[in-house]
Amino acid sequence: MVRFFITGGNPLRGTVRASGSKNATLPILAACLLHGAPNVIQQVPALKDVTTMCDVLEHLGARVNREGDSIRVDATHIQSVEVGEDLMRRMRASNLVLGPLLGRFRRVRISYPGGCNIGSRPMNLHLKGLKALGARIEEKFGYITVEAAKLEGAEIHLDVPSVGATENIMMAAVLAKGITIIRNAAKEPEIVDLQNFLNRMGARIKGAGTDVIRIEGVKHLNSVEHAVIPDRIEAGTYLVAAAITGGDVTVTNVIPEHLEPVLAKLKEMGFLVETGDEHVRVAAQDRRPLAVDIKTLPHPGFPTDMQPQMMALACLAEGTSVITETVFENRFKHVSELRRMGADIKVEGQTAIVKGVERLTGAPVMATDLRAGAALVLAALAADNGTVVEGVEHIDRGYERMEQKYTALGARIMRVST
Image (cartoon, rainbow, N blue to C red):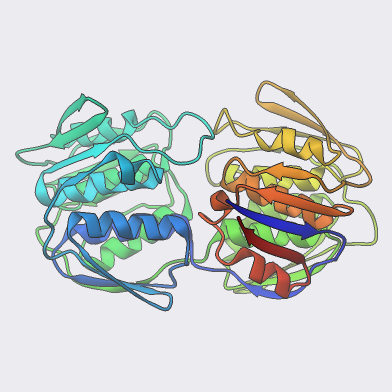
C-alpha cells in the first residue's frame, strides 16, 4: 500500500509544466494497432494507466519501447486479438483496442473492462456502433466477441456523447469501406487529438470537436510521429491547488481554451486568472473564495474530472456552493472523506450542498478513485496539521510524479510505501 503524508499550510508558488494528456495518450496508443508498422508517440506521461495500455499492446504481440517521454509501438506482428480478464480489469480504457483490432483483423475478443468505480459506463454504445458497421456481437461467459466479414460505413447516432464509444467507432471506421458519420459524438479535445493522429497516418476524418464526425474509409495507413496534447485535468488540478492554498502558480505547456470552464469558475470565486498562448496563472486574493454553483456536463461543459477538486476548494469558500454531477452517478465518494477533515457537505441525490468552513483539519482519508484522490490531496495541502492519504495507487493512474511536482511548488508531501 502507498500513502501520502501531507502537512498543510504552505501556499504553493512557482511554475510547473503540465504533462501530456493521459486521456489522449491511451486511444492513440490503441490506434497504433491499426497497421503493421512502427509509430512514435511523444510527450507521453509516465502513468500507471499508460503502463497498463503498453502491457495490453505487448500481450497482443506489439513491440513497445519507451525512451524518456516517447513510446515507439511496432504492431507489425500481432499474435492475438484477445485480451483477458486480468489486463482488462486493471483499466477501463483497455476496451479501446476493440475498434482498431476489429478494423484491421475483423475480429476481437475482450473481457469486460474495469477501472474507477465512479458509476455506470456501459459498453452498449461501443457495441451498437460497431454493429452498425457490420460487426456481429456475442457476449458470453464475461467476454465480448466482435467479428465481421467486412466493415462498411454507416450513419451512427449515439444516445449520449460517449468519449470511448466515439473513439472506438472512429478507429474501426478508418479501414471500413465507404463513409461513416457519427452523430451526437463526444467533443472532447482528446478526440480532436485522436483525429489528428489518425489523419497523419493517412485516415480521412473531419469534424472532431463537433457533434458530427465524418470518416471516409481508406485502404492503407502510414507510420508517423505524434506529440499528444497537454493534460487539461492535471493542469486544472494545479490551478485549484494554487487557489485552495492561497498561492500563486503558473502552469505551462497548456492549451488555455481547454480549461475555459474551470477558469470561469475560478474567476467567479474571486481568483486572479491570467492566460497566455501556452500558460495559465492563478493567484489567490487576500480573502476567502466566494461560493459557486457547478454542474458537470459533457465537453464543452464543466468536466466531471474536475468536480472533486472544485468541491475541495468550495469547502473553504464563503457561502454555500451547489455542485451537481450529471455524468457519473457514483462520483461523490470523496464527500465522506472531506467530511472527516471538517467539511460541511450534504448530498441530495446527484447534488452536493457545500457550506464553506474557515478551515479544514488533517485526518486519515482514503482515495477511492483517481480524481477523488486528487481532491483529498488538495484538501490536505490546505488543512491544519497533517493528513494521511491512502489509496495513492489510484492517484498514480492519472498524475505523473505528483509528490515531486507539488514539492517543487512548496508543498510538504511525502510518499511512503508499506
